[in-house]
Structures are given as structure tokens and as C-alpha cells.
Length: 212
Image (tube, rainbow, N blue to C red):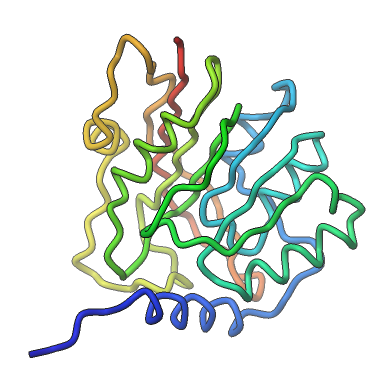
């Protein structure tokens, strides 16, 4: 019988992904984050699966206090160092955290989950449901998923299917009296990948606001 992947396997995999990519001094924020949050009064933000830290650093630069979590210690150590170098160390708390084990504590005005995909077992709908419950009244959950496969993606499975934003919202199964879907669409953009390569990609964007 084939052994089931463990949490340690996930850590090893994601540490390897990040270690194989050159560290950058100025990682870019995701376009869907900047278009959504620009002009929003800053508060407390939670970045789920923070990766190279571009979103956390951008938010901190806009005055947000950010808790950034990732399963990879490599990603977290790089982000912590970058936050100090950018003078935002007091506004970025970088924590290695396994979302498959528990959800980070606290209440937030913004929670973002960009491309929270993994080849390992993760009850993603449950994680996103916990995120919605961790919002303060008026707070927003921004979920941006892949709607297409970029040439540089770690997942090149030609049979992969990306659920639509509405399907993701249905899976989270939130009470419409408390949470409102403000956006659910699939815009396209030109993305820049490692090494400066570009490609047209589709994003699946879901924005949920806690109304009460």
C-alpha cells in the first residue's frame, strides 16, 4: 500500500519550490490585490499562503498591519528579512503555519488567499470558511485562483480543472444574510513569471464582504 503524503512532505515540497526560485528584493504584489485594496482604509490583514511576500510587503507599505502565513520556512524567512529591509518589519508578522492543521487566530479587516492550490490534501473550502468567519464586520475575503495554467506553474497537468468563482463560493457555503459576494468573475491579464517570461493567464476572482 502506498504511503499517504504527510505534513512533512508538504513542507519539504514547498521549501523546495521556494528554494529553487531566486530570492528577489522587491517581489511584486498580485494585480487583483492592488486593484481591490487601493483606496481602502488600512487595518489588519491576513495573507494566506504568502509565498514570496509581494502582497504582504505592498499592504504594509499602504499602512496595513499584516500577518503573513505560509507552510514554507524558506518563504517565511525571506519575507521577514525583506520586511526589515524595507522598513516595514513592525507591520509584517511572518509566521510558518500549516493551514491543514489549524487556522491562524485573530480578527481581520482583509484576508487574501492568492493561488492557494497545493498537490497535498487540504480542506480548502473549510479554510476559506474559517477565513470568512475571521473577518470583522465590513471586512473582505479576497480569493484569487488560477483559471488557466501558466507555463511556469508547478502544476502542468493538462487535465486539471479550475472551479469557477461561483463554484468556490458555493463550496464555502456562507449565509447570504451575513456575507455578500461582491465580485465573482474571470478576468484575463498578461502575467510575468520567473525569469521575466510573460504569458496571458486567467484569474478566478471571488470577493466576499462580511455585512453583519
